[in-house]
Image (cartoon, rainbow, N blue to C red; front, top):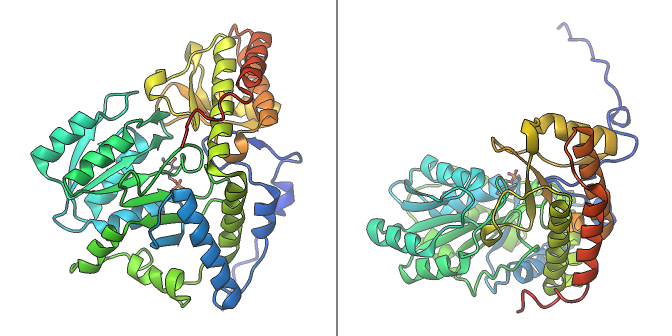
Length: 407
Ligand SMILES: *Cc1c(COP(=O)(O)O)cnc(C)c1O
């Protein structure tokens, strides 16, 4: 046998920047130290310790999803794998699916539904707008879908489906199963699975929860679980079969080797949410996002989405003068060591406000880097006014946004 020669490879330290970049894009987001440390540990994927970890992860997830349902499962995979898990367990050949499409990720849910044989009806919402409950109702009456897919927040274009509770209520009154993608929004703003009649909620690790990418969470309602129990057609995805995943997540036995370290990291991320409490966490996100938006506007720039349908978890900013997103973001990263995101086909850049991104010190550094980059690109911005606008908004809201979201 002739062996191929071993390649000569640089150690990872020589690839990574000396000073870590501040991750202020649309995900992944910075992780707290406790999450990072948990992520460095490997334990047996089965056995008593893991069983206790899983038990706590499920208890904390019920709080974060605001559900009493016992059907919480983790997924070794990105948010998209959790999306696919929701879809492939609840949709099969011939299932009618109404997909509410506001952008890139909601379109992905429609495509996944189609791939597993669903008959997909697409409700394409007007650009920059939230889905209209009356239009959803009209489409339900017209097409009688069994399943509806929708995103809470469209990370891709920074639109919030603010009428989500009403849409879910309407869907339930027609006995539809609702799948909600809360990948970027979970734990950054209110979502109440039971109270809103949601049948499956999906989230990833690397956004609102400030955990690592690659380990995700999904919850099913009791009635969604009953639908899966009654299903007769086979599920083509072995890894994503919820009934098989139940082996690990509910019976402490083997399905596939769980991503142990990632689950430990997720445990710590969820625990930090519980310690902070959801109310306080929502208020922090709202205060920080609105202050950053105020700072950007005070600098003389404009936001992409009108306030009625604007997402706070990710901020979309119009990029003036035909500047290239890629050039802008690269310069910001190289020169100021702050990473933000471009977008898929829109003339905007995006700054995240998820988890650890929503901290005052990160806002100041980011806004300064962002405004300075604008100046470097010859955009006439008033940087001092922007910084003052951020400061004033944080001062003003200190305390008085606590109750804005209520209970
Ligand atoms: C990021 C994101 C996804 C996809 O998550 P991945 O981990 O990249 O697969 C899905 N939906 C929304 C709303 C997102 O923000």
